[in-house]
Amino acid sequence: MLRDTWAEISVSRIRENMQTIRRSLHPSVKLMAVVKANGYGHGDLESAAAAESAGVDYLAVAYLEEALHLRASGIQLPILILTPIKPELVPMALEHEFTLTVTSAKWFAELRKSIPYAASGKLRIHVKMDTGLGRIGIRTRQEWEELVPWLRAEDVEVDGFYTHFATAGQADTDFLEQQVARFLEMKEWGRSSGLAISHYHCAGSAAALRFPQLAMDMVRIGAAMYGFYPEKLVRSVKLEPALSLHSRLIQVKKLAKGEYLGYDNSYQAEADEWIGTVPIGYADGWNQRMQGTDVLVEGRRAPIVGKICMDQLMIRLPRPCPEGTQVTLIGRQGAERITIAELAEPLGCAQQEISTSLSARVTRTYIEYEETRALTIADNVTFGLWQEHFSSGRDECSLCNL
Ligand SMILES: *Cc1c(COP(=O)(O)O)cnc(C)c1O
Image (tube, rainbow, N blue to C red; front, top):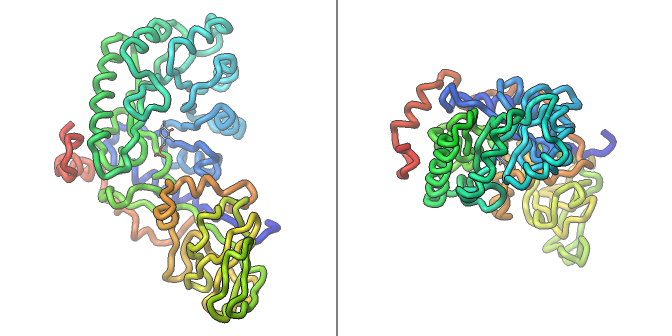
């Protein structure tokens, strides 16, 4: 590492989070670990390996390139590609035994022009249904009926049938309930088609943690594996962030009252102040909206002052510190802690937007965490938790009575 800016990722935290999630679900539910976008910024290979060691059944990524990267490193687990790939690239997917998302009959018609029959292995398919997110997927019965004949082909295996929720992280469950109802209706289309469909699934992290009864055959866990989840809405499990971010002061100086710093004179010292310069900027993913948020130095909070530059930012120090002093942008120093959740809330962004924004210029280091697990769920809470969750009706909505 040539530069003093690094993200520290605990692979055991990722593994433990996944194990905690596993214990909160019925034992028959399969786990799919979503490691798209370089494992939400945590490293795709390392995240996949941690998930595999937690016993997950499936991996998922957004794009073909991401799946190829996992296979090239020797990962053998089934991999679902969540976004439809171009039909002409299907031979590549077949070669590596990827599972493909399909959203239309048109895609199949196009595919059959180049691959009338997949001689080497089956086309493993998950059909994506749009129940309200309005992103990708089949919306109408007619679109489904048009697709079904293509799914009956001998070289096709319908391994899954799924949808994705728009509001699973929101307190108000009205729209979620509508999506669930729609999906249950669509499930009947699947059942009545006579196709052998192996996995019905709808829940991502928030839905799986809040409503385990929505887990069906499989849950798709991305955010929660990294410790990102709507904590206020989830009382059954406690997950821990896996990533911290650090740097070191490269210059410390005194600014006299009234002096400026930063592009566009964006900060003026209110008194004589100690200012530290930190070698991380918006090209590393610490974007300009972070101006005014705190970092930790010597266990105390220090605000980012002035506009964040491309490669550096400045902080107001509580007192003069030596150059080389560690600065923590995400994580703990002594009793103080800055979480991604705390940063994301005022920005109005998803927690994973912050971790996925950390650019390739930020070195990732990997550690096994031996810190006490006092905050994570007790080991002896097993299947009973799930049963309790089911019967307690904690959340006053129809999802609890499924
Ligand atoms: C990204 C993604 C997930 C994972 O969602 P999390 O909320 O991060 O768990 C699940 N399903 C689909 C279709 C996705 O695109």
